Image (cartoon, rainbow, N blue to C red; front, top):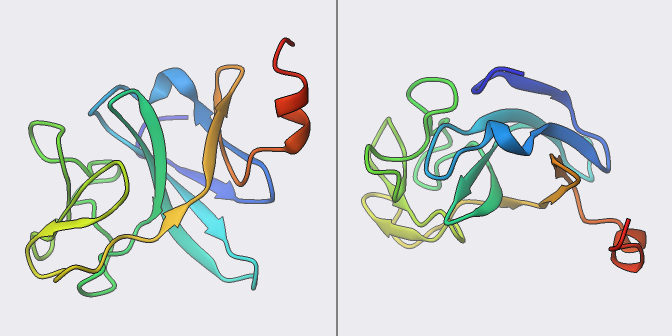
Length: 134
């Protein structure tokens, strides 16, 4: 999958991309998240400080997508998530508003995890914790 491409609809444990497609502080991968209520929403995953995190692709200020080009969510230095429309700035580790018009409202996180060279959306399966030596 190309960076910035949109993955297909998400199920309980949907593979988003290969782990090596996410470079630290680099381009993210967009995907479609389906909520528990069946609502389809744009989402994205990035790698920052070695950790993958995923959020709904929606600014907390005004419900517009953050990326100015598909998959471009971080600032030029790769330190903060930035809304391309209004300049709201968010901390990549937890989506917390760090400045701009978001006024303390943060991004909505999407559960994700890495396993055997891939990144998945959804909660980690409990069985994985029991079989860590696979």
